[in-house]
Length: 237
Image (cartoon, rainbow, N blue to C red; front, side):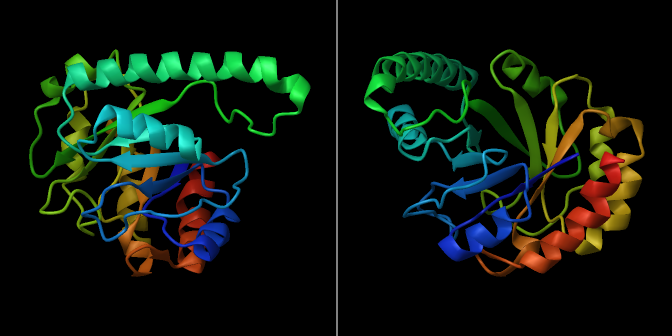
């Protein structure tokens, strides 16, 4: 089981969380979010995938941010259509291939701009409440690397509320997915129950955010550490 810590915002706190070695760290590029990221991402361990979170962003802006921050993954948290994702996938692949080719020629010049990942992962988010029509996922299966199921609410994430996880017992695909939405230390027992059921077979990562904050964008490092030890480490055994 992998861990994603989302909504990172401040340099020192980012480094403290990074020391816990989560698998993904999320940086929100959405001006309407209280956790909107601006500034410089500190150097992170190579094992951590820098993930940019976007909401209906213009593709050219999204791609420019992927290149600027050398993001390893993009999380699409809006109403992005299959056509949008297909085009984005193609553009990212083309830009990445060009970037790799340019770096080959610049090695002799000791170029320090390193490539962190040959492929940018695409994560598509869907909001869930009491029911969900899984057929809406079918057109996305060939153009995303994973899905993320979050609680449907007034905000585009970070609502701090869990949805009914039993809905995912009907998940019909083999595409891996993140579980998100109001996950905190008080969720440990429910998570262990969920992860013990067949419907969690393709749940490969847990996404945490608001339940581990003092204020939006500032994470409680010790609580994340406890959560990782109680759930992530246990599932790895």
